[in-house]
Length: 192
Image (cartoon, one colour):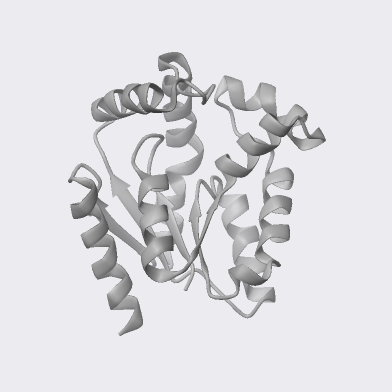
């Protein structure tokens, strides 16, 4: 089973992806985590991406798609993955469909976490407190830019996946357990 979690920054995608990983055994594939690890490790990829990420902009499609293609070849991805932060553009979505098709697979569902923009500001502030500010992109200025980038580049993907009949929406404003329960219902429906 392959899922995509959608929602703006701070919607809870990472939190829910970890729950799905624990309950369903799917690999939580977060491009943001992969890129932040590369930045922290000072790798060539990390150095190229740091400035882009600190602005809240998107890393180029070719870099991200290359990371995903490489990761999908790992044996632990055979059971399926939950994508968190990918795809972010129509081009990436089309390339993901091609990558999966070459592996005789596909996206089973796209789950949108519907949240209120104002609530996101509070969530990001809380995350910054909880992580000690270790994420350079957890600032009010960067959040505003990330929300604009999301609306401009990523939100159109909702129509793309709705057209494929794969889009499901859940209430991302519910408590974590409530969101997880709604996602669980979507996933159970896919198995039926």
